[in-house]
Image 1 (cartoon, helix red, strand yellow):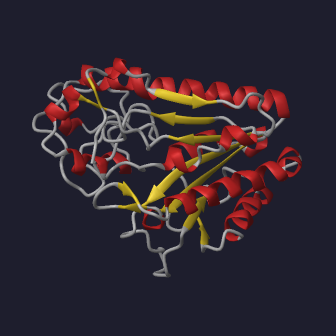
Image 2 (image 1 turned 60 degrees about the horizontal axis):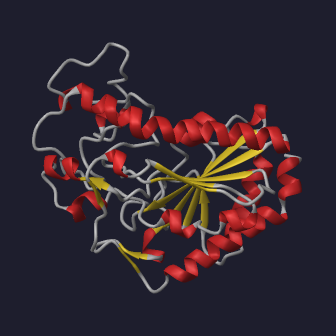
Length: 293
């Protein structure tokens, strides 16, 4: 298993935007958790091995949606890893226990995500293991947020504004993956292959959510809505149906396409990638429905 390493976060741009020659549909795809470039100073500061760190990634999700530009939609991806800075959080969700100095009073230290150790700068990886050997400085957190979180969201804001100006409406698809263990439903039902989240109807028009659900169901896999994932910061923050900006989070079961222990693609990866391409094509075919949504 190879872990891309950068001598500093500036060694590689924090984001990649794959743009179509011309945007032809009012859809944006974003992958905030598939980044896999680990700064060497971060690796030196962690108590975990690279494999342990990588289990927090939504590995290869950006590749699953790589066909978006071919069908007229931009794809925004973070290159920085979630364990280093989490773009799907508020900009200043920080755990004071992680830092050697006092945090400013305006920092959000009380959210449920901070309590779980999964703030903007995470204290633990997805498996619950602590990341750091020693405490960080607030200046380090601020640097990561300014150089990673901010460019991701600045770019997303620009893409949404341009899409809405061109088409009168925008649909943001927030792309994620979910582990094979621990994504059963809240009611104890069988885990689904896909979970779409519309923040319980507040982030996306019902017609648009139904369209996405139908397109995913046509792929031959089970689909659930908002159970157990209703959408994170990106979906809830940017989804504003009254302003004709809709957001949907999509979670893909990792066992469909990757070996979760080794962080490697399975032979079935190509089939899931092709399925996501068909999903993108379906959105493109129904662009008029989205515009009218």
